[in-house]
Amino acid sequence: MYISKSVYIKETPKGLHTILDKSEEFFQTESLSFLVIIPEEFCTPEIQCSLDKRGYIYAESSVCMVLKLDDFEGNKQSNGVRIAHQNDKLDDWMLPLISAFDSTTQVCLPYVERHQGCYKERD
Image 1 (cartoon, one colour):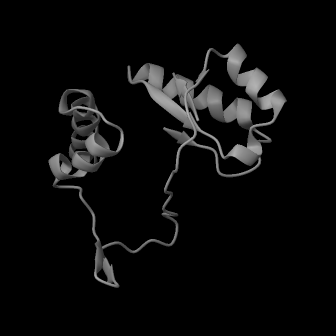
Image 2 (cartoon, helix red, strand yellow; image 1 turned 90 degrees about the vertical axis):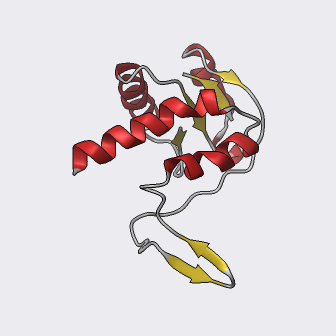
């Protein structure tokens, strides 16, 4: 996983440079830091060199969970696990981030505020 400037690359990165250009532009416009998560099988020496040239720093290997939103209906329960939207409970939403990434409320709060702003704009 490269950290610096969360973009998850899920397919062979044919258009990696375009994805990174658009991501960097968006996050810089919003004054937010972000990380890039690339599956190990995509991290060829060429890709690593490209990321190094952009100023990304290899941070660590990690486990990443991805939810495909195209077909996701939300608010489901399966095998005793409840999957639900957290749109109106963003303080609860940030708790797993704090514990999973050894973070703090102060670090996560700008993301919560940004999400709240998006929900207000949408309504």
